[in-house]
Structures are given as structure tokens and as C-alpha cells.
Image (cartoon, rainbow, N blue to C red; front, side, top):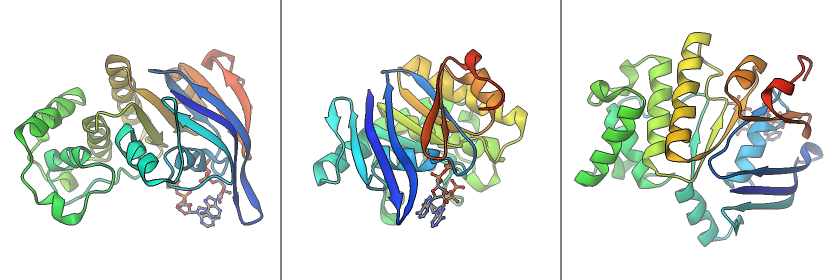
Length: 235
Ligand code: ADP
Ligand code: ADP
């Protein structure tokens, strides 16, 4: 589903990614593990073209990713993002936040005010059911806890009906119990819907517990690739 070859990203003279090759199979739940500053976030931003790689090639579902308008449009449809700081709209209801997933990646302010088709509302409700938040649908999102906001983030990503979800440190701001809940919902959704997930994490415990396969990244290089039980404590 994702094929990355020779990916490099330089910020001026600084090499954040130094030539990375990764393949991700359809429906796989891949954990990218590495310390802060390793380049995990840059990797995801290159995949969905929030930033332009310095070198290398990325194919998603057989299509080359580029900065061309058609490629960007395709990426914005097929790839959803989940962020460390949730990026929910605080004053909007939970349901409206999830509905923004139906609008593509960059909805305008005005489009938030629009009335959504009933079919979209049904999809949003179904996505909220998956993260067990249907009873909070009409609540303002800023009244929720951090873990609940991230579940809204997952539901919004699912509402986009993407092929791929890129989750950038989705539990870095959450306590351990809440983190496990959030990762469980994310993994379940991927399993049941066949969505390919790339999930950045910096805690080895969660990588062991949730990864089907783990890629270890350090200082812009892949330093480990394999099953979570093969991870040594010093990765
Ligand atoms: P991670 O997600 O693993 O914490 P990042 O991809 O955010 O790593 O960052 C990798 C390195 O690249 C860090 O040293 C960071 O400071 C640097 N970096 C990230 N974004 C930029 C940028 N826009 N300009 C300059 N340096 C950046
Ligand atoms: P997070 O901790 O949420 O992953 P970061 O602090 O890594 O976010 O990055 C936030 C933004 O700042 C990103 O857009 C990244 O590109 C930019 N950034 C990160 N490190 C640097 C840096 N050393 N120089 C310039 N910009 C940076």
C-alpha cells in the first residue's frame, strides 16, 4: 500500500531523513518507533506531502506521490491524519468534528457551517460508535477529556474512509491507561476496516504491545525492522 525508496529530507544543511526504504502492506498496522527528533514526524509529512522530500520516491496504492494537483487531491482523499494534539475544533460539536472528515483534509471555515447530507451524518455516527462516543455526539468537543478528543480524532479520520491513516504520536499527550484505550480503538478500526495504519510512537512498551511490525528510526535512519518481540530495550 505504501512503498518508500531512498527517502531523504533535508532542512537546510540538516538531514532529518537520510535515505529510508519502507514497504507497508495493505491493512497492516505498522509502528514507527524512535526518540524525539528521530525524523518520524518528517516521514509522515513526506508520505502525505505536507512537505516535499529532498530525494526519493513514495508510491501509495500504486500511484506515485508528487506535488502535482491531481496527486495532492488523491492523497487528501486516501490518506487521513491523526495528530498528537488532536487538532479538533474546540467549539464545534463532536459530530461536526467527525463530519469535517467528509470534507477532505482542509475544510474552509464556511464549510463547517454547512448542513451535511444525511448519508454523511450516518457515516459520522457509525465512526463515533466505533470509538464508543455516540452518546457524546452533540457535546461541544472542548468539554471532552484528552483521550476522548483523540477518539474524536480517530472517528474523524475514519469518516474520511481512507485507505491509509498516518498517526503522529497519537498518545504522546495521554496517560498510560488512556493511551492503551486509544491505541486499542485505532488498531481495532484498522483490523475491522482493513485500513493501513502507520503509527509513530516513542514508547517501546506500546510498540511491543500494539505493533504488528515495528520500524525503529534513529537520527533519520531505519535501525530496526521486525516483529515487536524482537525489539531490544536499547532501540
Ligand atoms: P520526530 O517526529 O521523530 O520527533 P521530527 O521529524 O519532528 O522528529 O524532526 C526530526 C528532526 O528534524 C529534528 O531534529 C527537528 O528539529 C528537525 N526538523 C523538523 N522539522 C523541521 C523544520 N521544519 N525545519 C528545520 N528542522 C526541522
Ligand atoms: P510535534 O512535537 O507536535 O511533533 P514539532 O515540535 O516536532 O511538533 O514540530 C512542530 C512544527 O515545527 C513542525 O511544523 C516542524 O516542521 C517545525 N519544526 C520542528 N523542529 C524545527 C526546527 N528545528 N526548526 C524549524 N522548525 C522546526
